[in-house]
Image 1 (spheres, helix red, strand yellow):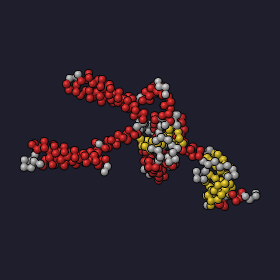
Image 2: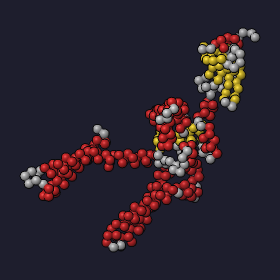
Image 3: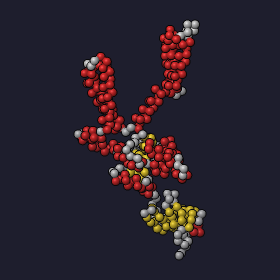
Image 4: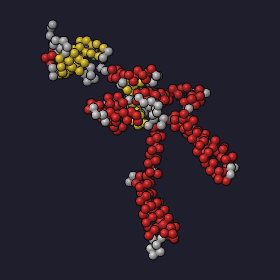
Length: 356
């Protein structure tokens, strides 16, 4: 039995007993003298029904909402809000005595109102100015600068829309190379949903693929994946929101978007680029090494064939036209690094053995 069902049953009993008590109190007013039990029974049934339906809305669901809010809130903001609440309550406690000396009705109400107002002000001031306050405190501590740098390095990583649609992040997350928590802002999720609802078939398929990859990440990733409701209210573009949110949280952005990469670097945001990672981990092939390549099409030059490695690297096979739609062993003759990526020139192994 789930926790919610247990609270439903408890709420049904409690509201049912409340209905019985209210029915007994109302018998003298609206009760039927011939059948005095009708009013308590009717109110008990109504109370039990209300308790069964309404109990989760005042118990478990607010608790879950609060848990999601606290889970999405950065640690610094949570600490600042708690300190602000404590300071606000202390000020309210100091102001409670003079407020209680007001005339009768105001003397009972104003301390409570003062506690609410001072708590709200304390929380708002501390969360809005948390960076300046923490910086001021850290500068006065001998270990403050080191701890700030350490915490900045251990921040979460924001995921961009393009890197989710790309899909390689699902495999990378299972290798353990990504530290911390992967955060998906709500506005990125909304953009994915908008793409998935596009009338264009290609865009719609890309959006649905992104949603599938995100679902796979939440189920299979070795690091936590969270949807956060943190937003930048005065910015409309998703990329701008992502960069500003990364600056606010002092964390990195994971992307494969070239333009976002450059904009983020110009604003001092650390960027983890999937494409750069893929280029860095590609196997290094030297002239004279042998590998198997499937020739799939003709090349630009006469007699050439073209194939691709698993990582997308183009392999130009000299005299490879005759091997189209076949997988053949080839010998690397030359490796070129171009602006578009790496290109490998090779020759079929059986032809390399023949004297030219």
